[in-house]
Amino acid sequence: MAVLNVSFCSSTLPPNPKPPLSFHKPLLLSVTPQSSLCYRTPQGLNQIGPPQNLILSLGESVAKASFLALISASLCFADPALAFKGGGPYGAGVTRGQDLTGKDFSGKSLIKQDFKTSILRQANFKGAKLLGASFFDADLTGADLSDADLRGADFSLANVTKANLSNANLEGALATGNTSFKGSVITGADFTDVPLRDDQRQYLCKIADGVNPTTGNDTRETLLCS
Image 1 (cartoon, rainbow, N blue to C red):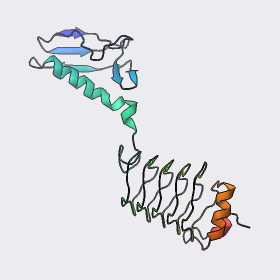
Image 2: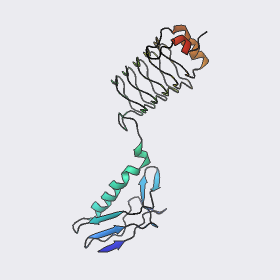
Image 3: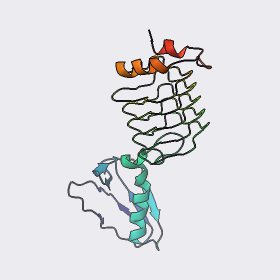
Image 4: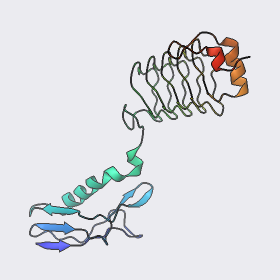
């Protein structure tokens, strides 16, 4: 049985590294604490080491290509570019930067969901739990956010025009930058501690009415309307 110490890390690592491995009898691949493994992503070379006890046992019939594929598969989970591309319980790679026009998310638990830069026109979020969700730079034109729990949600730079926010709870939500609520329905919405621009606050105060059924707070009072 052969024992081979391997270090894939090198500033000159070729695009498709081919370590000089021999496959005769069953092979034990051992990486020492002084060794380290690298893998390549579109962003460049990444190091994940030094591993302590990486041991792969291969049978006599395993080809070199299969072995390299096995190593690649075992390292993919550590690729930071793949680790977070959507986030939240609805699934990575699904809701961030996507065209989700008209999608039905009503009643779903979407806590800390990432909808950054997504197109969410006429999307249905009625009664959804969206605590800490991010709608940064998203297009929510005509979306239904009624009865939604939006505490701590991020609407920075978002287009929330003509949306239905009736009875929504936006306590502590962010609305910085050029966030716009023009044409939206806010009856019974709770805007407690939402840092609105003066022009947006003045606009919302002109149409504000109702009391939030969950918090019991008057919409006009949460907007600090005079």
